[in-house]
Length: 158
Image (cartoon, rainbow, N blue to C red; front, side):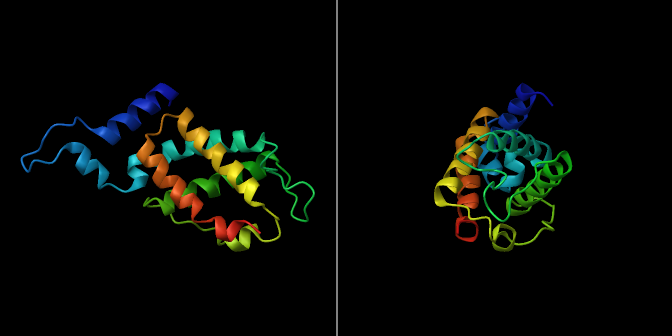
């Protein structure tokens, strides 16, 4: 799906036609009641965000994506990156109300020993925000997703 098609799909899914229903609610009211997963555009849209985000974060020296200089240094092989993206899509889908079940370890266990600083976490969150902006995800959904991500800080930052 192209970026413009993704933007159209997200925009349509999120705003609907804005007509008033018989009960007086707009279709955007009904859309707001949908899980964040649906308002983001489902698995395909989340995968697009993850693809953009991982590329962005991996190239950001403020993030130290491969944890260079720690006992948990990670090799960014094609297989490792593919698995990481799969798990990240699964995690985001599950915490936003999607049908997927996250099958990975809890955040505290996964990140133990990585020595992730508050500044690195903030840089990672900024990269996620930049990816959401680049893919034209509406502000309310961005804020909701970033709050969810922010709630993992206590389990990730050492």
